[in-house]
Length: 204
Image: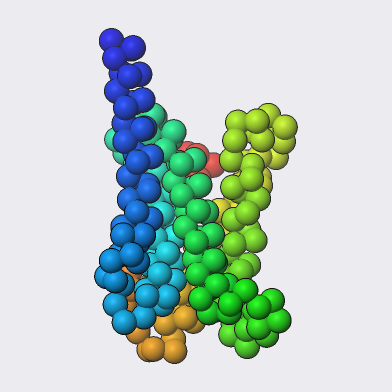
């Protein structure tokens, strides 16, 4: 019955929101139990960056999954995933500003010029900020559906900036295995969206 389906999705949504907090809870537990290795600051910065990338992949995966599974209700998870991506990006930025730079604005400004992957990460955060601010239904009503959709197309720039940020960061260690793994996932998801758009634009 419809009401049972509604209640099922309500419970699933609550459970899903709880799952989004698990990485943060684990990091807190690891921090207070000395489980982050010899360099906890680096481990926190790396982990929050990794989770930002993972949630970005999941955001882009929602629409393909919704079409393949024929479950339109999956779309309700996209907003939560987007906000989780922004939340972990904020934690990643906080770790950098606090542990690496000690909240010294002059040092951060110098680092932006010195290391390209830092300003790429900052640029990605700047693009992510208006998406998070306008994620509510009230923002959709204020902007109008068309303008809201145009603004949120910025999400397609984020994978490029995130991958370049990750690539240049790993270039110092000459370790690109994870970079190519994320690149494969994100490029596949973006390629699907291009294919789907072409199918709608030029139907056979």
